[in-house]
Image (cartoon, rainbow, N blue to C red; front, side, top):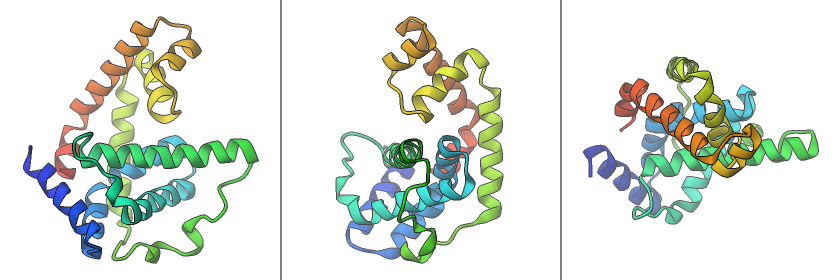
Length: 190
């Protein structure tokens, strides 16, 4: 286990102990990455920021759901942000409007000790977008459908009318390239 992973686990434990500064530290560490995920799914900057805040609100209220035996804290957070963004997207598609009860009315003070760092978020978002743009187009389609639209590999294969093995290979290549291209970002967050 890397030092970053053990630090993340310690933060989750401190959140379970209701330590506000632990949530703030986890937010500072992962908000730029998670905002990139929510922005890719939702495209609306305001709605993506709300999904990000809602993700950390859920972390604060449901930290006991984290299982260190199943995933790393970073993977858990990315999936939580992705799922929250997809919930908002599905609601918008079904009802033609953003999800009610958005947190924008209450602001970031609903999350104790959390403050958004605009310039750092914008800078990291630009680097993530550049890395996404560098993914070959034949791999980008599979990646987008799986990661940002919430489809399974089988559903993606069906939608793209490609063999499942091809879609798996495309998604894997895209993820490996992103991991390589964003190595410095990932290291910075750990």
